[in-house]
Length: 339
Image 1 (tube, rainbow, N blue to C red):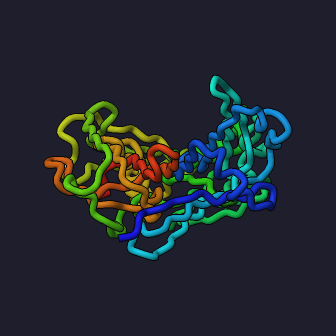
Image 2 (image 1 turned 180 degrees about the horizontal axis):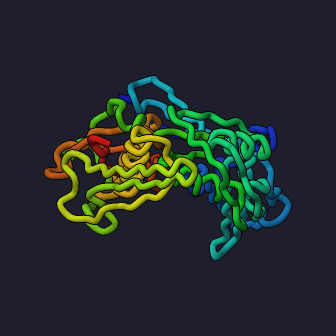
């Protein structure tokens, strides 16, 4: 059996520096985030001679295209690449002793003013997808809308928030998820993702490096009640949703948001309850590097007693270091059933 190998491919400002940087590379980490965060990149370089804090000091804002290339991880002679995406250098730290240089990057274009600039404005007679599309265009990104419903608002206020902060809040209010990666804004329904089959089974007797699971009752709700009074039509909508196998403890989540009918109230109640309860059971697992594991996918957990179930990957961190080799760390939550 051939030995497993992994190496990092880096293209800096359009130039392939993979070979040049290899002897300096101490640690590489790519984090594939789920809802609410952009993907990020961290590269730690040996700098005992001061090259990286001197003539080789990277340019802030420069673009880095990164990938992890593996050989023999899935079988002898097989080469599989994990494209990490394109990142903009956002922060550079140097420290010692011994001297090191750490380069941090965020998904390209997310470092623009849509992430930093605080704004106050009113959005009137507009849908959530239109808000997202406007923000995406302003940031030079593309919008991928993967939600069946599209809430319509008479007015929503953005108060001293960046565009991304405001859009994240709007998505959470609507019970949908937001992801930023590879110059795209992706808005999706987590329930749809969780309904898909698991890509693999992670068993307690497999080559796990570490694992932990947590079950918590705090901030877990038994039910969700949606109430809305339409001042124009003088009508009231009042609906309470309690899922199958509801938590034995917890309060009722109260939501007072515009809905046009009971069908919309049911959809909103399920989505709101899902966002609140998704972290009732969580896990953290480290395995030998696996390029097939990414945020948004599902895995089956087996051999851990009451924690056995299908889990959704919230965050997948792929790291490489000279000492530990290629490792994949997963943050998970147990898939919710019935809503």
